[in-house]
Amino acid sequence: MARIRTRTRADLPQEDQDLLKRDISLYRVLSNNPTAMRAFSGLGQYIRHKSILDARLRELAILQVGWVARAPYEWSHHVKIGYDFGVTDDDIRALIAETAGQSTGLDAHTKLVLRAAREAAAGPGVSAETYNALAAFLDEPRMVDLIVTIAFYCGVVRLLASFEVDVEPEYQPYLDKYPFPEQE
Image 1 (cartoon, rainbow, N blue to C red):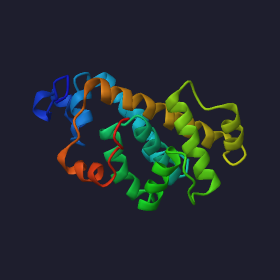
Image 2 (cartoon, rainbow, N blue to C red):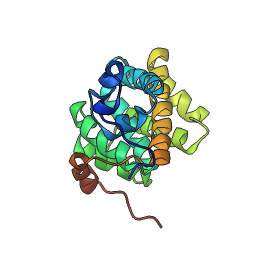
Image 3 (cartoon, rainbow, N blue to C red):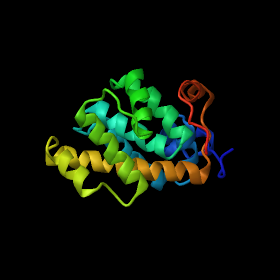
Image 4 (cartoon, rainbow, N blue to C red):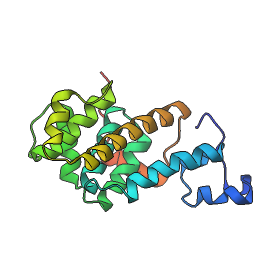
């Protein structure tokens, strides 16, 4: 159960009810501060709808952050969203294998994006070696979009964990299909 009250549209003043057009747990929590929610949502909307980064690579970077952080909410939502942007079950299985240090059939560019997301999630950021390899195939605007995406979702997973945002029942099947490994 979330640590902070989850709001409904009825809880919000008329001018803020649009914040819950997409009625998901994360937004119900963030709508406790409508100004902060609008700021948060603005960058999220840019990443999803206006980024010039390849959508499949974007979603794989987000999924990698969610997997490394063991963030059930993020992972389940972006498995579903990833399917809409070209992520396949083979991609997801390969991401899990790459994280475990196993070799996969992913192309070199995808592997680099995943490595960048793992490095940034571990902190403090993408290594010089990985950055230079990415710069060989991403122009500067796409590099900015990739790093902004990874950094934003590193923040999102911390927010989700801190507020203990609940996974909605309709997203549970994605966690069941791709569960996190047992902690050692």
